[in-house]
Image 1 (cartoon, rainbow, N blue to C red):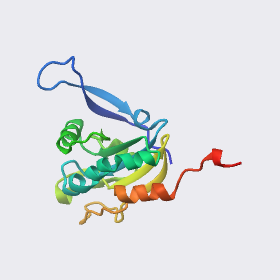
Image 2 (tube, rainbow, N blue to C red):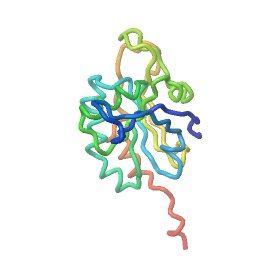
Image 3 (spheres, rainbow, N blue to C red):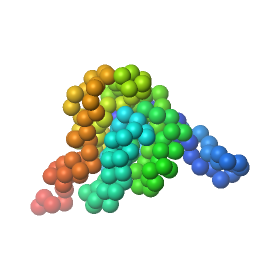
Length: 181
């Protein structure tokens, strides 16, 4: 399955801008993040939420080197939050290795079929928790959490964990054409 083609509205630091907020808007596309790369993408319900901030994002950050050893070029965390929230959360978490993708309108998440209502928590529409291995824009490994539903009373977190995804990568080495005589 190919990733949906969308544009993300991001904020990037620009030293030519003076004042306390030296950032400018920059549109990034699906291709900017995924074309020509082998990537882990994980999506979660929201920045600053307990499971996302305590386990999921910090553990992907901590295991980044191990993912690189398995041929991963980049790890991205996507959430239905705006660029301001994602940037502040990344700074708060001390993230250096995981890229944060703001899906503020939820367009990417909707096109992935992973948009759910979380009105029971006062969140509105958010992403269901999942992870994916993506090679040049194509999903080759898919790890959605069980129980997909609107207003889910629980917050499943198992198969989208970095520990599960890295185990899958180690067990499913890509086919190396040069090994064939």
